[in-house]
Image (cartoon, rainbow, N blue to C red):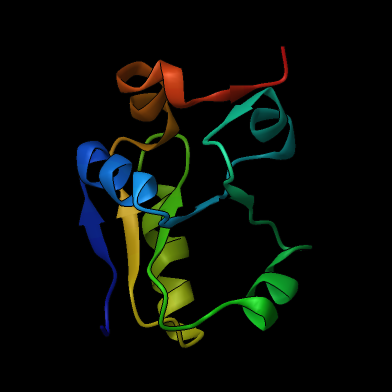
Length: 107
């Protein structure tokens, strides 16, 4: 895969239920407040550890606020050697609205 693929919130949820990796690129406060269960919080500080420990052939789904910033992050992961990267259309806002039962909250 030379370019990421944008996927729907339903496709992302299905892949997540099958054990797919979700990386969340939102700010730390937003991630701490609520996120997809088992999502990895990907920041400038955690990126090198994530890449070092990742299976570059395993599918990775990138989630942001609304599905816009995740596109750039997904393309960046492709450039780092990941084979299968997806940007989640609608972002965390859509995930939380569609699957509120599958959101981990700090509260």
